[in-house]
Image 1 (cartoon, rainbow, N blue to C red):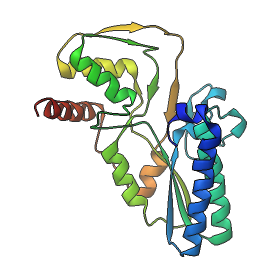
Image 2: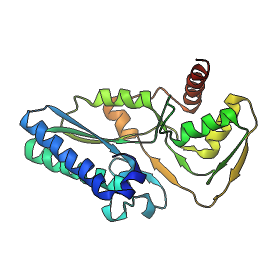
Image 3: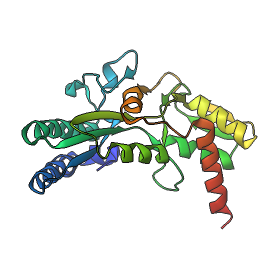
Image 4: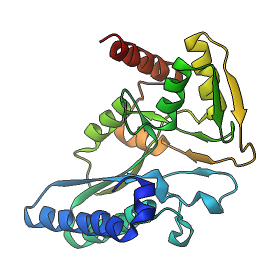
Length: 232
């Protein structure tokens, strides 16, 4: 279960699926002498609610009592179980904490696609706070990192995040430039700022990982995709 809203509505199902499901996979991997175990975790394991600088990396110590997301907590518990399993069975295990992924798709949109697609059709947009931001990452960059992590040895925890911290204001202004139209921005909660700055430096060093997509290239990729869909 990867939707935080679904997890909040049914936390029992969330933990049965994510935690017990992961334990079942670990047990299967041990019995079959699997060489490498890769776990799709999430940036929501980080407890930003207690931070003032909003900046974390893969070595940041996480207090589970400050993790407000049921989904994030289910993933954090699974991370601990993976580490314990590694100690007991020496199974090569890589924990990948996925950031906010975007890319060419029409459903389950992140803020990145949602805002850009809306601005393709409209000249105005309403958001919470323009200062809210994330290190958005393109799906192709995610896939390259996963492929590079397949044969890692030992126990590793890596952040899969974009290079650039992008605020909603910057996303909208960049979209405006690419779409060649003026956009009116309305903030309905300007003081309710949500910042999550997560470093990918260790991941880039360990995997020799170079990201292909920056903000401009990512937006142009979405523009090409949507135009192709509209022309079918």
